[in-house]
Image (cartoon, rainbow, N blue to C red; front, side, top):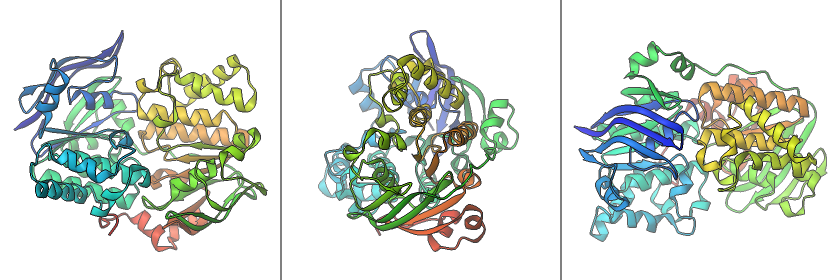
Amino acid sequence: MTLLELTELGASTGEHELLSGISLAVQEGSVLAVLGESGSGKTTLGLAALGEAANGVRLTGSVRASGTELLGRNASERVRARAGALGHLPQDPASVLDPVRRCGPVLRELAGLRNSGRAERANAVTAALRDAGLAPGMARRHPHRLSGGQQQRMALATTLVCAPGLLVLDEPTTGLDPVTKAGLLDRLRLLTESGKALLLLTHDLAAVRALADEIAVLDGGELIEHGPAGELLRAPRAAKTRELTSAPEPVPRPRTGGAALEVRGLRVPGILTGLELTVPAGATTVLLGASGAGKTTLGRVLAGLTGARGTVTLDGKPVPTAAGKRDTALRRAIQYVHQDSRASFAEHAGTLGQIAATARWLRGANRATAREEAAALLGELGVDPAAAERPPGSLSGGQLQRCALARALLARPRLLVCDEITSGLDPASTTRLLRVLTAAAERSATTLLLIGHDLDTLLPFADRVAVLDAGRCVEEADAERFAAEQTSAPGAALMRGGLPAPEGQ
């Protein structure tokens, strides 16, 4: 049975074409993976599959869900037509979670769309949490009390609770450590075995290899290749497909020196428990840990966004954990690229101007010079500066990640903390980003602390590795020794991957 059929689907904004003549179908119990570099149209395609589009985007062609046409209907008609047929997990999980409400009541409300009795709703919520890899107790938390990976899985639970026949998943593995990702992929596989279908929009080749029956490749909004997953991965015909399915190239490491950053006895109630960490000057240190280990909280403390007890020193000088107590020189010295890059930009202002503001306010550059530097750096990172003139909402998640990195690099900081900066990028864009980041770090003598899960990409790039577990640093090691020996159980688990129990158990 065909659950979703796209025929000559087009999407445009003004004279700019986002999708052109896309025809695809998804069958019951099958997985169609859509590959494409950042900005190729994957997210636009995912929204269009629901009959939806971003503001200012016009859809043409046909979108049929279980035989029902979605285009040309009003919003309430589209919602009714999708009920029980389609579910959607967006690239930004925080956008589907209510920041002022606990997750449980929201899940119960959604369950009420398909279940009338209290017991049935409760059972649906429990099942959705289980299938998303979360314990029932996690429903009592507000979204801000969840890590990035936990938010991703809670957003998945909101999709599953209505029991749709087809799930449209936009980068579902972004921000997940290997153990958690392996568990999520296993759960998605079980869902497909029960008859659910997946439209998987991703750059994650491990997810594609694990789940996909068919692969479609987008480039500049056009469908350039489509076929059985095994055939396409084994012998891709298009040059862009070969680029997307190849491993990232290794990148050179920056030089190392003495200690730049020292963290001693750092405590954040319920998250960090006396954390100790040393980051060598001029080096690249990769910070690893399972979802919920405290990595993002540490990054926010270093950026002055989360208060903490304990001491932080940069080049031997104390750093207040509250941003309001830092002077301009210190704000410039420590820059932070947030995991949720979309939330870090003002919604309605031009993106390029927001990037250039760093050079203006922290380095004293004039407006013209700041914009020139911003445009040049975006070009190096593979983002069209003309596209960055538009507001953030018109850019893809991967493009915004690189915009956020450019904004931080323009400060020429002493310490740059990057939270999952490669998680939304295809291999080619990842390699380009890491090369630009390395070169910029060399030029500005910047120390790098990279928070991430993509070990195959980051380990060849790293000088040092630190592993967090339950709010403590349980291992610090040279990158080569870490990869070869795996001295700690948490570190070994991260490298090995595997299937965890639902979180909270």
